Image (cartoon, rainbow, N blue to C red; front, top):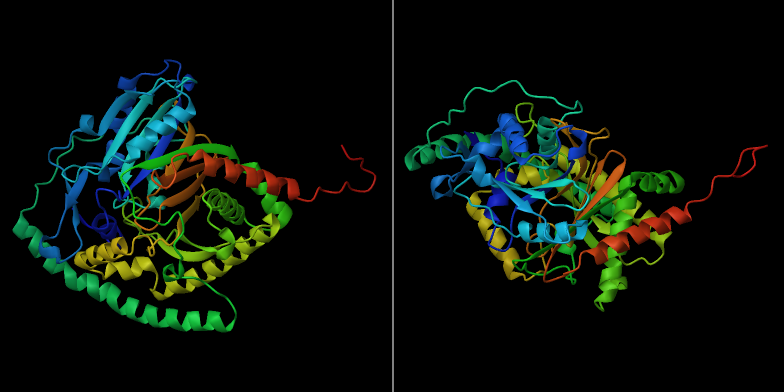
Length: 474
C-alpha cells in the first residue's frame, strides 16, 4: 500500500469523462528476430513472467475518505491479466495510418477505476509483419522517467533474457473505509510538516526571482499569460493521435550547425507546425507567441525508482509569431534557456508545481478543475500547448527475443490545452507523437507534415562545411 503524492492525486482529481488522464505507450515489435516467429500466447506468457517487475500494474485506486489526504494505491485482490490485455487485428489496409486511426479511438477509452488503471491492445495484422502493443497507463502511476524505468524492466539489451521466477502473488487485504480514514488522518501531519514550510519559503523566493528576471529583461511567462487560440478549447470526447519516426541525425545536424540544442530544434519545429495550423484556420499567428508547458524530470527518492510523479513543469514562450525559421529557432533557444534557469531556482526553493501540489488537498484540485472548465479554454495549468522531449534507449532492446523496433510515448491533453507534442529518441530515430482533440483537428498528419517540413528547411539552412586546405569538395 502506498500513499500517492500531490501530482499523482492531481491526475486523478482532474479527470473527467472527456479529460482522460492516462498516458499512451506504443511498442512496435519486430517478430522476425525470434526464430519461432510471432505467437500471442508466448507474448502473454513472457509479459506475465515480468509483471512482478512493475508492481503498480496490480495496484488499484483507493480514495482517502472525506478527502482528508491524498489517495492510496492498494493491491487489487481480483486482479485478472486477461481483462487488461486485449488481442485485436489492425483495421484494413493494416498500414501505419490505419494503426494511428485505431490508436486514436483507443486513446478515448476511459479506464475503469475499480481495476488497476492500465490496458493493453496487442495489434496484429500490420502490413509489414510487425506487431503493435498499444498501452494506456494512467498518469497517476508514473511520470516520464518512471515510464522509462518500466520499459527497462520489461525490455533488455540481451535477446532472450528471462527474469528469475517470482513467487506466487499474494495481494494484501483491501482496507476498510474506517482504516483508510484513520490512515489518511494519521499521515496528514507528516505530509504537511515535510512540504508546507518548504513551499511557503519557495513561493517567497520565486517572487524575488521573478522580480530579478524582470529587472534583467528576462521575460519568463506563466500559465496566466496564455491567450486563447484555436488549440485552446474545452475537450470533446474524441482524440486524434498520429506518430512516426524521423532521423535523429537531422536534429543533430541543425543543433551542431546552428549552435543550439536538440530540444531547441524540436521547439522551433513545433512552433512552425502550429503556426501553419493557425494560418489554415484563419487565425493570425503574428499576434502573439504561445505559452508552452514543458515537463522536466525532478529528483526521485531512491525507494521510488518507477512509481509516482516527480516531474515538475515550467513555461516558456513558443515563438509561433516569428516567420523567419532562423529567427524562430534562436528565439526558441533563448526562451528555453531562460525557462531552465527559472525552473532550477524554483525547484531548488520548493516553489515548483510538484512541491505545491503536495500540500493541496483533493477537494482543492477538484475546485481548480471546475474553474478551468468554466474558463472555456482561456486558462489551463498546461498553458497553450504541452511540449516534451525525452531521450530514450540508444541501443536495441528486446522482450525475450522480440526486438523493439520503435517506441512512441505521449502524455495527455486537458481542458484548455488541446494539443500535446512529445518526442522520444530511440536507436538513432526521433519518434514524434501528436495528440490533439478530435474536435480541434481530425487530421493530425497536417501537424506532423508541417513539423517535418520545418526540420528539412532548417537542415537546408545549415552552413555547408568548408573543405580544409588541399581537400577537394565531394
